[in-house]
Image: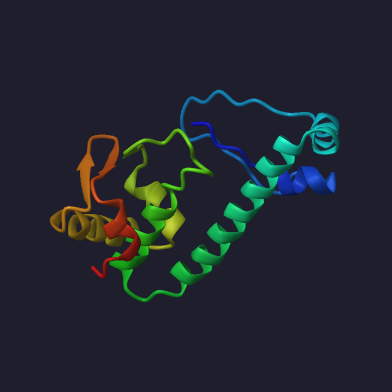
Length: 148
């Protein structure tokens, strides 16, 4: 909830090149590209917002490349989960992430079975709690830094 995407495409006035699929009922709003550029030209606050979004997105991209290179699947799952709790990119998330193990497996690049094992390990370490329909993060700092 409250997430934003597509600012790079809007800056370049290109068509969006990626598939977007809502996994749940969602309310989605669009900002016309001309309005986007008008705001860039007339609002320092909007410029700062977009610059901050791009900076966070760059950090997310670099972290994702680092996570992809990790050989420990438990750490890969932990770091990938932690990345989803970025308060700038995903401001309305809270402590519960509504995601299936299969969806998480797609994001992390592991099998659903291996993600299940990693989630059990993270739960045993009390970093998360697996709940019906998702998981609750109980120790975000552990997901970001602990070796599992």
